[in-house]
Image (tube, rainbow, N blue to C red):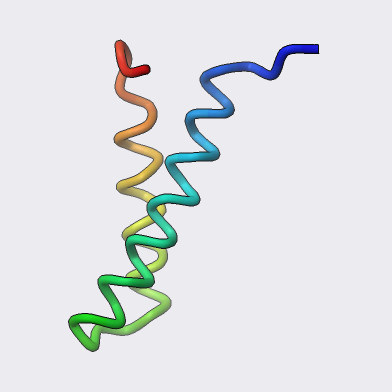
Length: 53
């Protein structure tokens, strides 16, 4: 069974966003929870743009 590519992209985007948010929070000293939420939202938004690999 081949996984749905869009769902896979969303998952990768969310994971990348979470890691990016964690890194951003560590570097800027911002609230970690807020950085994780913002990072995951940005990751999902970028992954959901049509026409991306």
